[in-house]
Structures are given as C-alpha cells and as structure tokens.
Image (cartoon, rainbow, N blue to C red; front, side, top):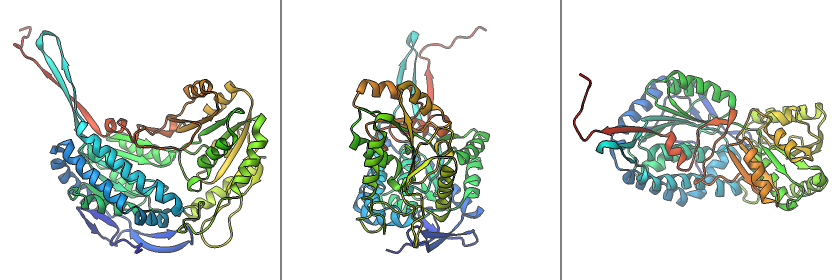
Length: 484
C-alpha cells in the first residue's frame, strides 16, 4: 500500500499542498521508521479551507435531510467495501493491530455515517398550539461551519463521529487530525467526495495546536468539536467561548471499574483486559482504576496474569497479533514515567513494566496491585497499558472513592446482583456506564463525559442537538393589538 498521501490537505474536493508549512513526519509505531511526510497548514491553506467550506455549506443546508442522508449512507457503503485497505492504513497510522482495526475502526466510521444518514430526514421541528387560535412552530437549522479536532487513537472513527452528525444537520466541516496520525482522515474526505458530497463541505487540514487555535479563533467558525486531553480542552473551550461558539468536548478520564465478589471471574477478567489493554491502553474511556472486592482479589490477579500470558505481541499487520506498539516514542516515554512513579510511591508491580527490546514503541502490559487512591497512577490519566488494582470491601465506600476524581467519562460495574448494578451506576458520576461489560460504543448510544471529562455528547440523537440551532416562530392568526 502507498502510505504517502498525494498531498497534505484536502480542500474543495482535491488534494492541496503548501510545503511552506512545518514538515510533519509520519512515523510507523511498529518500527519507528518514517513512512512519509505532510506539511502543517499555512495561513493560506487555512483561508482556502474556510472560504470553500463557507461557500459550499449554503447550498448543502438547503437540501432536504433525505438528500443529505443518501450521500452519507453511500459513503458508509464505500467504507465497508474498503474496510481492509482502510484498516491497514489505520494500523500504519496508529500501530494498532490489524486484528483490531478490521473490526473497530473503519466499521465504526461506517456505522456513524449510516446512522446519521438515516436520521437526517427525521430532523424536524414541532407544531405548538397556543391559546386564542395562535400557534408556533420550531425548526432545526444548521449551525454553519464546524471545526473537528481529532485525537490520534481512533483517527478514522473520530473523523466520521464528528462529520456524520455535522453533515446530516446541513453543516460544513473542517477536520484537523492529530499531527501524530494524519493519514486516515484524508481517505475519509476522498470517500465522501466519491459518494457525492459537494466539494468543500468536508475539508482536511494538517497541523499541530497552532493550526487548531487558528481555526477555533476564526470568527467564521460556528462550532468546535474536540477529542483530546483535558489541558487541550481547557484551551480550546476558552478560545471558543470568546467567540460564543458552540462546543463539544470529548476529553480524558480516569474511569473506575468496580468488581464485586459475586461477579463471574472470567467475565471480570475479560472486562478488565478490554478496559486497560485494548488499543494498547490508549482509549480515553478506559477503566484504569480497577476496584476489586478483597475476597476475590487474588483469584482475579492470578487469572488476569494467566490471560495476559496469552497476548500475542508482534507485527501489527499480522492478523494473529492482538497487542501492538504505542503510538509514539513520546507517549511511550510518558507511560514509562508513570510506571516509575508507581514503583516509587509503593505500588506492587505484578507484571510487565518494561519497554520491549527491538524496533518500535512496544511496552509490556503492566499491572500494579496494592494501589492507593492518592498515588499518581490512580489519579492521573496515563493513556497506556497500565492497570491499577485497588482493594475495597464496602459498596458505599467504593462508590465514594470511584467518584473522588476530577474526571467523569466512564465507569463499569461487574456483579450478578442487578439491583446492586443499577443502584451503583445511579450514583456513579460518569457520562457512560457499563454493567458486566466495558468500552462498548454503539453509535445509537450517547457518548460523553461529566465534570472535567467533557461537554456535550457524540453519537445518537443527542448529537443532533449539538450540531443544530432551534428556531422558534410565533404565528398570530388574529388582529395585532397594542396599548396605544
């Protein structure tokens, strides 16, 4: 496969290059080798993207929802037809194993386009009867030009999670991928154009934080949707607020996974693996604080270590591999720093903790036990394959400890007592909760956080609310009276 794109940016339906921008090397995480290069967007590139998107959006918003939806559904079909090639590209971009990307990345992108394509025709207002024969109606209208800022862990999925509801509502979008994973969004732009999306409605520009800041601060931008860290979210939210722009913030987490002693042990271990080691631990919603009731802690740890021994770590392009490298040297170094802190602060290293020798950014799956709530590895988002196991005995106590964090993205509960499961999730301060499962993200279900983990929701009908305005129209049927 030819990894190097035709050019760095996709604007007005074509690839565009400006090598006056800062060069960005595209590095394959499995080897550390440079696969290609793109250039950060210059002010001229940003201007082209905004002007073309603003122009295209006017006619797009005038189409019926059904007309817009047909194009999105067609794009979903094309993505599914090309799932293998798109998955290979995602693996080169992120380092995630092909066994994972084949079923969790482009497929999720297609699901979003299909879902919001189907929903587009149902985006309507309501009739409101009033007294004296008067009435009112509401209508949902596009915001205008949206900016999507993506993270590096799910570049194909995020490009469509943001584009699908935005386009369904009649908006245009400029999408800036993470500079770490610049390739996948360009293919999405190609496919949308092929499916019939008018040129200019979905533009892709490359760059780091300075490019994102230029887009967010431009007065012609009406909405910003970010997937990223809390520190980045604070900056973007403040910049958007200065212009009274609509925002969706899908930020980080330090989510609790609570395992009660009546739960099925094998299911608990599976849930903990998915909540900590899928995508090499690089998922914002991961349940990295694993609270295990004392009565089953030893059995849980023993079985967990046995299961980890069966992980196949290797070439991510080999479909037998199920645990790949981290996305970058920088991210690997950050995670190794947290592992060092965990040891220094007194946590017991159960397994892992070391970089794997050879090329690429590989790290052993790592488990700490005897972790306390005040340790760095229990407080801070690590974003790597590091699990912290904490003991608990009392239900009320574990709920209080689970909620004692600035984050509120996700939470999980494993128990066979469904009364307890619902009782606990009712009290957990998290935007997405799982019962006897973890990290499921069907497009039909809202996804987003509480507290510092974000603002707004992605996916489901809720996303429509964040990509459209409500206009109210009052209709007087009789004479207009006034006091004089």
